[in-house]
Image (cartoon, rainbow, N blue to C red; front, top):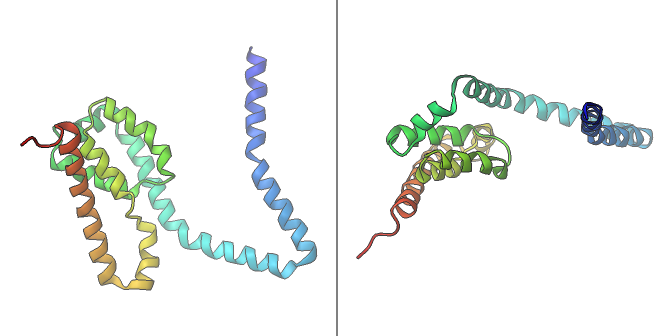
Length: 177
């Protein structure tokens, strides 16, 4: 049994390198025919990586610190049904700094909901995922700081309003006449 697990783990590690290996092989093959285009592509990649390294590092650092200092009990205390305004603020900030595909968050959000986190807070989190700090510099270059500031503030306030609406409708049901 132990041997089977070791082989499965080695196979899993090997699979991680398939995509990078295929990409590297394409670059080598293309280099043989168009070396100038390969160098231009690598320079473009290096420039893009340099632009996103700092914001991505900040987000990963914040995620690391959150995982280091926040236990599930603390999360529930801050985001439970009785959290009030503090729950909305924390949820909004968490939604803004969250990264990755949305479907990856669903199991965690389901688990939090089962542990008592309100639907309003979860909806606020999901809506605030549309505010992406690493895109703000790009938006500033296209639209200017006034537009970006107003849009960001209204997006956050709108997300909180949607969260409150979801909370009213899902926790208590629609108002009765």
